Length: 335
Image (cartoon, rainbow, N blue to C red):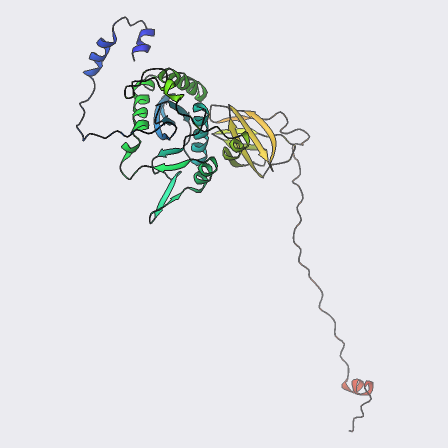
């Protein structure tokens, strides 16, 4: 609140502001103390989802915030998305790794279905898509114990700081604008002294010694999602309809979609067929310049082979006296 009020002309001190806000806050209920667990450099990244509500045109709407923290240095990262399914989570993890410029040895989160399915005795059953992702990157998956979210207290606290310090009163035009503000906010926060470590997270980040990021092929592989192309040449991605070029003909087929650095790349049979500029607003329709080139308004549907049955006529059988067969084989019949 303090920096925003200063921009609006507030000349008082932060102590005065804190004293005023203290009278408005509800009293907190006591709880048992929590033993803080510290990790070594490069050992762990904690991450979690959080819901964020906002008002648009008089209606309350919702976004999801993906929050990640490097446990040793306390470097924070946040990005806002429209959904929190498994492909989106993996894409957010990849963006966080790029922001931290490396891979940790382990990742810790809740027992969400996009990560963890169930226990088979003492063996955890992981979501197969998530398991394939972390296994190929050489990262160990970890989940909290049941009903103990304080196991990942570093990211839990970070979610609280974002909801208390960044989100109240935030104003944005679209998702890109919001994420740009969130990135600037994280950059400022990561250069301030952390209350627990009494160090600047950016200074301790140098000690993390994270593993190097994989090559571009791995990003293309794990960041892609399947989409079916409509008969009029559109794919739906994050609430936006994107048109595809006529060549190659992909209407009615399944393609792979990869979002990266504000671009939506579309692949068919391993080949890149379109690179589109990502639209942050939902319910838009983007027609590709070559979407209907060389296609008539009433273009005939491509002929497909159909299985055929066969109707035949009943054979005509001639009726003969049995004596003719006897004569044919030289059999003499006595009457």
